[in-house]
Amino acid sequence: MKEPAICATCTQKPCRSSTERQVYVCGWGVSYFREGREVFKAETPNPLRYLSQNLRHELSRVIAILVRDANEIDPSLRSDEILLSNPASRIIGAANILDNFIEMISGVHSLHPMAHTAGESATKTSLINIINKYFDTYSMINNQQRNRNLHLIIDQNVKHEIIYNKKAIEYIISALMDNAWKYAMENSTIVVETSEVSNGAVDLYFSNYGREIPEEIDIFEIGAQANKESEGFGLGLHWATVLVDYYNEGINSADNPLQLKHRQHPEENGVWVHTFELSNLRTQLDP
Amino acid sequence: MKEKFTHKLGQWLLRRGKFTVCIIDDEEAFFTPEMVNIASRSGFDLIERHTSCDQNLLEDLIANPRDVLILDVKGIVAPPVAQDGLALAEYIYKHTPTYVALTSAHSFQMGEFHKNYDRLISDRFLTALDFVSVLNSILDDYLNRKASFYKRISLRVGTFIIRKSALASA
Image (tube, rainbow over all chains, first blue to last red; front, side, top):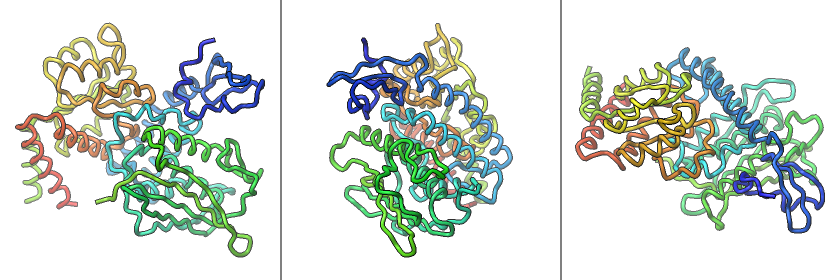
């Protein structure tokens, strides 16, 4: 049976490490089972990627209408900065959230490195701007499960511009910020710092206060939830790791690959400090 | 008064350099008239906006190459003019000196065509000011890679003056 063409774009190859003689359907919509070294595959009639392409195609025009009309209300708007005091700017922020959500639901497949070989976004990609943008954007969602008051401190040494695959890095940062608004302690502080690695690469650290995550839970695994009351569905951080793979495939570097790691350590009174480290991020210093 | 004069001088130089931009996108919510208007006030006043490319437009793009062509990948063209936006981009890229920029909601389709365009505009949802930033970035890249000597001088000086006057009035 001929292998589906879409398999050529898959970098993770979950099929190769799957349990033998069990049928699965991967994120690309390919059904498969493994026998020894051989993996037998067939496409489902309506693979997930067709649905996600359709979703992306139809909703993109709706999001564009939101942006257009917000811009009509206020022609001075920019999409790389959200002003919480400006309703039109908040509409742009909401459109960003929708766009990120579509990416997550469609499995971030549109951010595969093959799609970006011609170059990157034409606009400047300041790391500080991205961090502030998504901190403000995700502060807009208010419900009982989310924080209402967090503080953001960005270390003064964070002065870098993203020079490769800005969309992937934006998504990863947006996932971390969304998680902070969901799970950090109310009235606590998120701290963002960097340390230089080499040749412009930096390690980026996001730290926040929260509850302990049980050791047995791998928070990067699809569907992982630290507890049953979690608002999230365990998709955001998983897709962030997929983007890390895509990023590394695009830079084609076995040395100093981008990595996303999490660690936690206890502080006083049952509070834990969670640190997400995005290491070997390709940047240049903002002039 | 002085800033107004220098801004107008910059615009005049840009007009002398005749930086022409052609946009073809079937979705009217993208690259709206308001965006084109604001871009025009920033010095980019030779922008055409089309929703599709027919045979007449294609022949015109070949006979009178624009400096920059911004194309949507899907929905703007049909056979016999071209198979799709990618095919159209490839044809124009190979047969004219035009700087070709692609835009799409489905950018993953473009991977294998990376040799047939100059820029992928990955930001999909642009405000008017975002669009001006995109045009400025494209202009810089165009001047570095594809512009003739005379055009380069006129456009570089014009954009320098305009950006300086924008900073002064900010």
